Image (cartoon, rainbow over all chains, first blue to last red):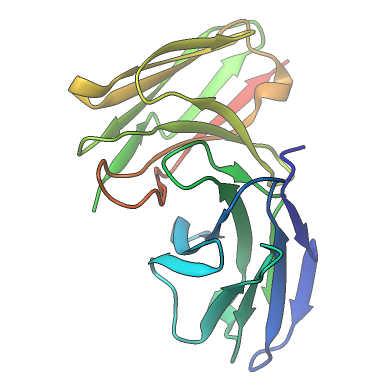
Length: 112
Length: 110
């Protein structure tokens, strides 16, 4: 158990819909990272938050947004969903630097 | 950005065999992690190894940062070692976001 929790574990929805994925980092970790794993793109970094502030952005679509709350949990919002958004979404937590990132169990999203 | 390449892409072993998985990276890194993704999709941390050698049971890893590669050794493989092995690194001096390789799919047969 990495100490990082993600909910829900599975999500099935339809094209055009909006969903919210939730992540709680390990106790004491201030950084939350979001990654997407798809068959064609592999594991890709989406966005990082550190202590409530956006710190880095990767290949995140404009239809996607995230935030980190004062209690340090984070939410990834995916809107106007398309079939190609079907993927495994991971949250990872870490410190302020280049320490180990610990990954949650992931949310498997299926868009029909 | 940094490029991370893993080889071989696929590996089939008989239980009890040893194997070496390789990870090359295109730029200086200040962090390198190895992960095992099990058949249920969970990413499990194996090693945080920016340089040097570490061992954990039947697994060990070596990173030679100056030559930009890392190796993961699996000894006396077991069927539970099956899955996909990823290495990931951030570019040195840049943000700590991880760039992943494409993974090595390992199948250990009984």
